[in-house]
Amino acid sequence: MEQGGMMFDLNLGGTLSEKKELYEIVIIGGGPAGLTAGIYGSRSKRDTLIIEKLLPGGQVGLTDLVENYPGFPEGIDGPDLVKRMEEQAKRFGAEILTDEIIDISLAGDIKEIVGRSNVYKAKTVIIASGAEPRKLGVPGEKEFTGKGVSYCATCDGAFFEGQEIAVVGGGDTAVQEAIYLTQFAKKVTIIHRRDKLRASKILQERAFKNEKIEFLWNSIVTEIMGSKRVEKIKIKNVKTQEESVIEKSGIFIYIGLVPNTDYLKGKIKLSEDGYIITDENMKTDIEGVYAAGDIRKKNLRQIVTAVADGAQAAMSAVEYLEEKE
Image (cartoon, rainbow, N blue to C red; front, top):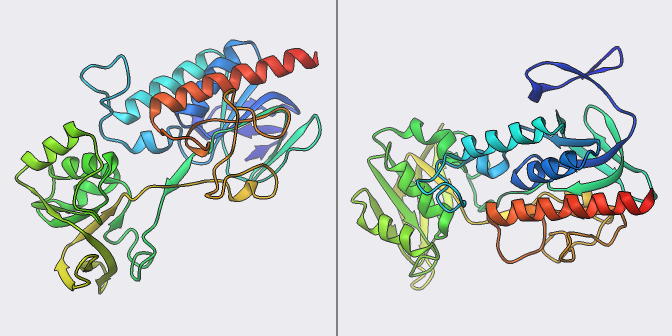
């Protein structure tokens, strides 16, 4: 919030900083892509602002263990990795503010980014607002979110000590989080619509060896039930069409991501499924506007590809600024 021409920055430990009239680079999103773009932009001596609606880190900040990021052979906690990136961006001079972007104007040489708290102006914009968990869209999901329905094992796993819970999904995230949840739960049931997992072989091996994990194959969730909290889950076998009800105290959902591009519709070129379309240099169809990370249309969404996107987006933005000078 503003006080006498100053801006209160939640991510800088409650310190006050001058609100600039115009930034050279504004980055929307403080996940790995956004933080890396901030590192490269500020290291290039450009006024760089990162705007994050919650806490820096995005999905990685909610990940218990990252094992496939180069340089950490024993793995690293997601929040720890993010903290290092954030500190590095700040060390080079990037400014990090907390705000939620609700509208944007990308036409012309000066871009206008509208947040709930302030309006920001920039010569270039890097969109790295990521993606959020895809919902099942079944009865009971919305009603019981926070009451047994969760999308974050590290946030909520400890609430299910000694209980029986379910995990929906068959990819890396679903299986890794199921393994993590066995630290707390008495039993974890992985519900997957196919007859085999999509997760990497090493995660599959760990899951199959874990005595606390069981599998419901060829199955989908059709309803989540309970009184005040989740108590039961209705399951349908996609091959036999048979329905059954299992008793569970919680359900963790990992069935993919949905890009955070609602505020961009009609203002930038998106794919049919809502992702931003870029070239190999992260350029969008609008001059001076770039995209990086999970929000971009691409085949592989990993931390390592996000940071690569962020670095390239920042350098493309710097090159654009140099051409304009």
